[in-house]
Amino acid sequence: MAEIDTRDGEREPNASEQPPQRKRFRSLWIFLGLLVGFVVYAYGFQVTEVSLDKITDETRQTRLFQVVRALAQPDLLTYEVETTAIDLAYMVPCPAGGFEAEPVEGEATFTVDPPCAEPREVVTISGSGFRGNDDVQVFFVPPNGIELRLANVRTDSVGSFEVDARLSNRPDTEVQTIRVKSRLNVGSILSPVNVEGDNGEMLRSPRWSQNAVQTLDLIIETVFLALLATTLGTLIAMPLSFFAARNLMRDVRMPALQLGLAVAGIPIGLYIGLLVSRESRRLIETLPDSAWLHGAVAVGAGVVVARLIPIAVPVPGSNVTRTARIAAGIAAAAVGLIAAQAVVRFSQIGGAWAAARLGVFDFIGQFVVLLGQILGAAFDVFAAIGLAGVLAYLGSRLGYRLGRRVAGGLNRLLSILAGAVAGALLAMAVGQVLAWLYQIVDTQTTVVIPAAVGAVLGAALAWRSSHRGPIGIGLAVYYTARTVFNALRSIEALVLALVFVIWVGLGPFAGALALALHTIAANAKLYSEQVESINAGPVEAVRATGATRLQTVVYAVVPQIVAPYISFTMYRWDINVRFSTIIGFVGGGGIGFLLQQNIGLLDYRAAAAQMLAIAIVVSTMDWASSRLRERFV
Image (cartoon, helix red, strand yellow):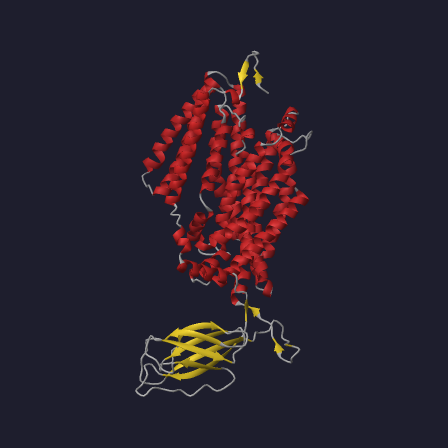
């Protein structure tokens, strides 16, 4: 096609008809681009110290071959070894008149040429009658009996060998010894029965080496470390991911009065919720340490809560008054907290009782005890967050009702007051965090000044909102969540493991916490991006029915993200298995600790066993996750 028609019907020249000057400029730009790329890569090679001289260095090649050969022989099996030592008298240096040792008698013999020599002299050691293709070690033994290795040599197919060795610098007037050792792996038994071979010789099987047993123990620990980290991280990341989805948060707006009262209820709820949870625990701890008693309290309190819930959340058409609903809700929350603390004590006391009586299965009772401790700590958090959410909701409803009933200057005044209170409380919370971080004891610096600044900023924001409409808090929450997730993701799990090792000590618990925190940040980002890519049609359809925001998420968003969430979670477990092999280098538990130790000791055969175990587990995880994705995703 010689020409291209434009909208104006004018002829536009194609590439072959470009003016010669434009072609030259294009060629010049291409040349400059190639030149810049050449300079960049030249500098990159310089800063990375690329050198073929190091690759071709014979010493480095020899060391590399030794390491590669050791890695190709993982330390998995061991044998019972029978060692045969053959000694030959030798003199260093040669005495006056020379020296002639008596020849070695037996099936396996060896000679040394010359029969005596000066220190550091090279001698030739020849042997015959040994086992074919066997490893033989040659030692020089001075009168003190210490074996000094001279050479390692492998016999040929008929059991002969010849090797040149340099003598040690150990001159002595007494007779010394040249010793040749051969080792026979006779094995130990995997089963208590020896097997007789065709020639009548007893054949024995090798046993797993100690390194193999340690590798198996730690690779199992690694898998479960990754499982716990993935489970904890996923459970926390799922709800948080909705706050980091722009399509769900961008249209969340709230009037200043409603927002101020809701925000003011959050710190108050956190403090009161934590206080109530701790007081309820003290109340339960005053009861006798009886698992049956605490179990009965938990069941009885649960029955009471079940009776109160229908009153607090009545069905449509019921004649329950609002006062009765509020009272029933408060009573259900208080009794439910008592039931939760009773369950914690029941788990701790009952688990300890079971652990003392389950024998080899005592780990089940210990798990129940630990589960009780975890629930006890979690209930404090849940109580604080739950009450903060309740007070925030009540504050929001109060602000909504006030905003509908009052207008004009009074509405603006209430909004400014609510914004000032909310800003002061938030600023004081930030001041307390900074006081803890930097150990600031000045109350004016950490309380008074932040409260004043926060009140001014909150009042200014409320005044601005009164003129320009509701405040877009959704995007503020979105950007805050994304910033936190990005900050956590930017910190490698290896660094997080170092911090948690300081906190909880060496071991897999520190590694699980580090991986869990990294999983929260990584999965929350992946989950939120999946939420942002959903089809908007079902969301709009559900909203058109008058559904609340929560109902929209449940019925329009969740069905579209279940399959991707499962896929991301499986993939994260695979990642955590590989991560857990690395955090062991800093004491985070798992097989990485043993791998780092063997590499540090230059025991590459032992390290090869750990590398093989890691490869097998990662391959198995990849196969299992692919099968699960085929079935459920």
